[in-house]
Length: 108
Image (cartoon, rainbow, N blue to C red; front, side):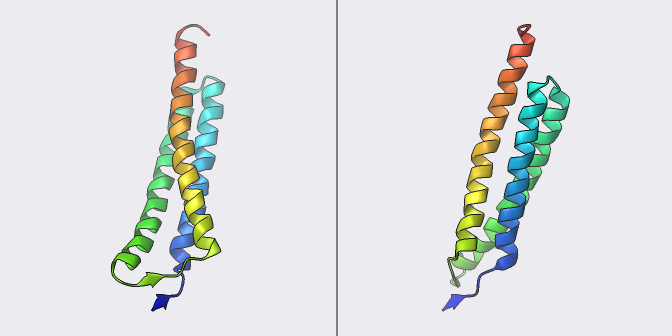
């Protein structure tokens, strides 16, 4: 039997995935202006949001693993999209912050 969508978990993916990406963007902007302490703080916030989003995803996966077929909805696809984009963007933000730091260390 297909269970109703776990709206709370899906909204967790969307909200916290979006927060993670937004903080990653702020980290890049901070690094661009040379404020690496602020960049690090935004990266940490992004990691925290990503951790919460992962917990939402785990709740959905646990339902499926326990034998409860989970309905795939447009909201769920949207939530998964937010999470995957946040993961990718955060990885790139860390690399970008590192590059800005290296440029500054070289006197740039």
